[in-house]
Length: 278
Length: 168
Image (tube, rainbow over all chains, first blue to last red; front, side, top):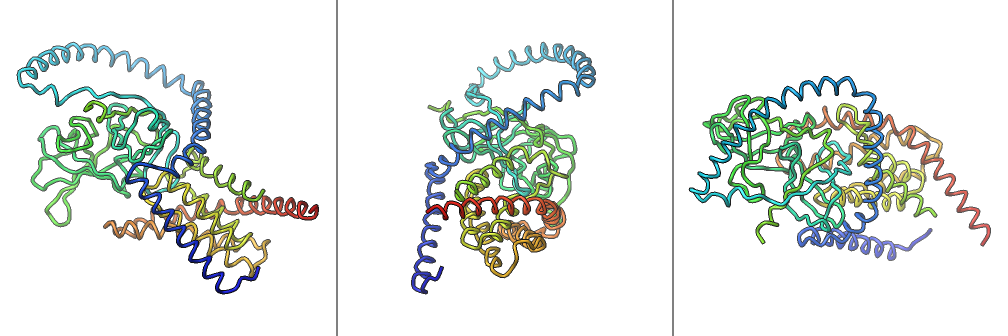
């Protein structure tokens, strides 16, 4: 097809303008939470992802049924033993809880540990690339989710929601390079910043940047700190694997193994912090 | 016909990539199917269709997993550049898609690396050694099949289009 130079120029200008407008729509939509294109793609993609996810888990369950009987028997024994231990610990903890409640009522701290509304969800899609660790879950605005809601799994922190479409939403995990969480070392009370790192994220590990004078050793437990706006205080994150001093002798880095196994994650728990404040 | 088939193809690949293809990761490295399919089709069909395909695929990726609109443009440029080679080569040449996938994957990843450098992550040697090179090798190995398949799909579409043209 032969096109004169003038028309060609015009086509280039028009396509350039449409591209700029498109990116404007998307970015503005992100800022004001009116995801127009996201909604369209959401409606198209969601059912397929959901079907594949369901099929996948069911087929995996069938084969796993025969494969895992041996391990399950062993595990059962171990778990029975553990159960007895836990029962004992539970009674202890119940006592402590009672005591804690009494003391708290004295101190009027009840507000800080309020119970947030929570709901479960399934993971239906993971980032196909090799750089970032983002995944999508099968609940969205219709289920009452909002930006910056907290995601938990297996009793540990997973991350937060960064974008909410009507049917599904995007989760930024804490091992992603773009994620930052303010954390506290349980034993010493020192506060640092937990951040994802590309070199560590494929192993499922994140790192803490913390002051050189802070007291942190291998095996320390790490929880979310009281400084964060998004994350409520006291959510367990993981244990410290290794501590190294930075080249400039001003900081030290601690590698943290989260309680959550990010490669085999399937179900998550969502906590809406905003729901309580209304 | 063409729009429906290719659009459906991109959609299917996107959905499979985010669900089932996580199972074929080797050492946590996944191949990039978008690069394969965009390179194959833009080599077969020319720069205009390549660019549109790339834009569509990139937007799909950005909407599902990105935080900014970035891949849309890089995939579009990839489709456009690969399509420029179409008039000069035979379609049965199975070495060219190989070279193009190699360069294309490098091109897409270099955008990410630039973005990372701007954010202050400057360990480029690690990025190349542990992520980019394995991904390129894996992607290139799968290109053989993907190009054959897309060649056949394209042939079929062109036959159908010819038939409809003869009727009218």
